[in-house]
View 1 (cartoon, rainbow, N blue to C red):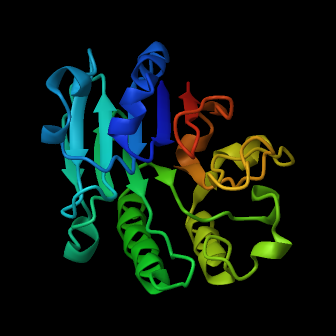
View 2 (view 1 turned 30 degrees about the horizontal axis):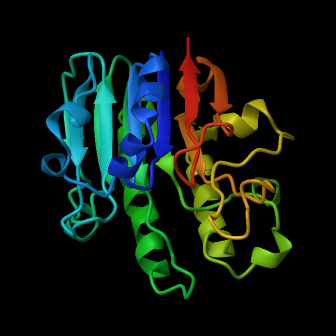
Length: 253
């Protein structure tokens, strides 16, 4: 099974750049897109049709903001939109889909903002999601969480850790939440497989950062421990452009 995650920073912009073809060529079973910034009625019918996929949308109430989209090849027995928390769900951040043997979360985690204005909102989101995921795991379910976590976990996960100690996305309290997810029984399967590899999934549009590879790894697959043994590979497609993020794919046996 192949799952792709990608923060597209605007689905309409991505489609104009011809990246729909790249996505279809990957022959993935599930495609999780974040920050789509559009409702389905804002996209031409032909453009929003992904042949062979069922589309599940969770746009934000605010126009041109946030939003997630999950594309699935199989006929889903169950899916849920949102977390049941109105202040989070209004921003279009969560789709949960049921697959054989596991639940898959497509998540766009909040950004704490440069002035930390949204930091508490972000931390509250981390807490609410983890509570829900822990309840599933306590009931014997396996879980995969993927998407843009908006946090680099370790110094290896960003180019300039020393300069970003006080920057949202690398604050101690944000990184501690990633620790809590791992302590709860989830595995960062990319870092487990490649403990010393330096690759990034996001680069600012400023300062020629992508060309100079001054980036952050903030897009993850966290997999419950019972499912982690099925992971064959995690691939960061850092050569694929079209957004300030790049796609990441997970291969499951």
